Length: 96
Image (tube, rainbow, N blue to C red):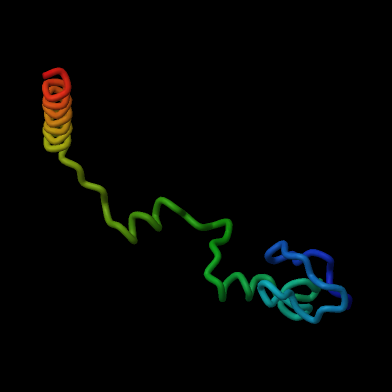
């Protein structure tokens, strides 16, 4: 089989008569022939399939997100107070 002009795996230009893609290494056996085993390649690379549940993945990797709304509110007001205080200090120093 002749190499395609553009690699179907990575989109790089493939030189005429090349045996493999110079960028990603895909060849007739692994990526650009009609007989390539894409499912086996997908499994080996860990690429998610159509049944992948992103929300479940995030929950398993990072756990449940537990925020204390009162704490978040207090921190937010603290930063606003710091910002206003700094603005007043700069204004005082500039107009002095």
